Length: 139
Image (cartoon, rainbow, N blue to C red):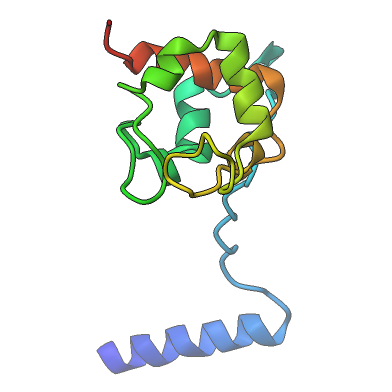
């Protein structure tokens, strides 16, 4: 009985393939850029949060907790550099990045402009900076 069921399932799968049925859809690829707000039921869905944007664009080097990853990205939570900069200055820094040969580079590891995500808009970077500020400890 079990053998008939297996043979029947295999025959059905082969028949579907023969008539052009592609089978189950492939899993969607993860977008490299943050999704744009969409209208759902007449309302606009919320834009990605600063935390979501941080996780997509910064966490690979600075860590999910923003405490840094050795030999990649520095700690952003306790960073005196970050604390000494205004939000606008940090936005500009993220937009431009830093080369490995920059005299101010502590790690000598480059930080690509926009964290390597060219799709980030100024509003996205501002949201990331606001999220980062929420993690920082007081002086």
